[in-house]
Length: 465
Length: 164
Image 1 (spheres, helix red, strand yellow):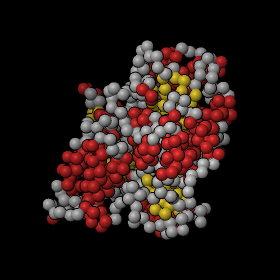
Image 2 (image 1 turned 180 degrees about the vertical axis):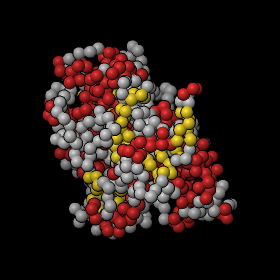
Image 3 (image 1 turned 60 degrees about the vertical axis):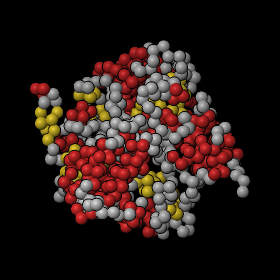
Image 4 (image 1 turned 90 degrees about the vertical axis):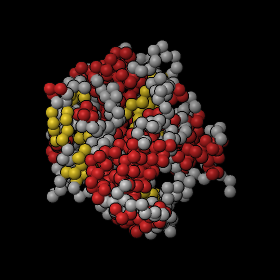
């Protein structure tokens, strides 16, 4: 294979390890199948079709591939949840509803390398015995939907999709299904309801674990775009070899999306756990803006718990346990969990000392209040009250007792909802209050304690809608 | 006024229904997307037509239309602008961008609410909606005009110049 060059100004950072983003911003690259084939696309599909499906799953298990959508659940294990002796059709859905604030990695895969996704998907379908699969693309990616649909048509023409793929006897159809702007469709059972043509109300687990009872109540595998792409690369070098990248239990590469108050925001594919948060901010993103210092980091999409710049964290267990600062946190699933947050979807939002925490939290609460599907009362009402209280906070109309009130609302949601949106919307509030209580209280006015103010007037005064 | 569905639109719709061999109801979203692209918004007549097409009750369509922010029941302008209001874009100035776009297009957002999120310019040429995350946080602030994404927008004119 020839040397890869990247477009000027878009060159990967020296410490990146490009696998999934190998062709993103590449000179001479386009989304056509001919370009992809000249680069070796669909070779791993040919290889997979000569293997036993279970052997493909074994490679994915050996690789220890953890889902890149948010939860970090091992993909091979998820595939293994399809009930033994199942006689129903099995479906696979690629979750391309990328909508966790701070995350923007799938956008580039879909727009620039659709055949990588298709190859990973076809291999995954072969491994799990799927003959009908969907790619659920968020409505806000209209160009991506067109590009992927064209890629599917091309793959059909070349015999990589349809009946009797490459004379293997394996049949598969893949269709694009476009969402319609609802964040909750990223939740796998909400996504399934949406794909059934309904409101995206998540289903309760148990019994509705998709691998047992998913689309049309049949076993269904739902995987993120990045996860499915990795399957192709796992087959290329084998699961054990693939697992040598990254760190133990946090294998492979993953794409970090950095936004907010850094000099150079952007996407960086790194070996999981091989870089610290400080290296990501200072080396890859060019550091903080001139004259600014770090105040906080939201490390894995807006629902992950915020980390304060001057906190001390403990990672590792027993004799390996050590105290580290925010700068030294390794960017992997387990370390971020040990620090009380999560790697989530890989969306890192950096906040500097010029920002008001009340304003940040209010923005996040607006998002969740808008996106709650409304099915469960604690979340529907609670997310709206968290927004209303922080609306007061940013307009100087909150009283000091609003802060414990806000905390109480958040803690009344978590654990009391059908899906994880309840946690997603309450964790930011809980964490910001825990870590920035003084600043939040500082934005309240003691003289308003007990004052009755017509909320409509208050909102009209604030110009908030 | 009775609703007329052009044959090429109906052909697109029929084709999209074939993507769902197990359940026709699954085609609700794609059918509505095709209808909204053509008619710009989803009137009650269109909702009834879609229900008949998919052999469903109109309520099954209406509940979907009212649930998803991507479906509109009100006419937008000729060019519909969506400005991202979520955290990274807000930090990069999307509130200022929104204000500037409104000023330059003559759009007044005072009657905007959760159920009426779209404001239209007096000449009907532009409409604006302040939407949640467009998933391009690394190039904030961003907005979309119809299907086109504008990144790192410093000035409303960068967005509007090709439409005036």
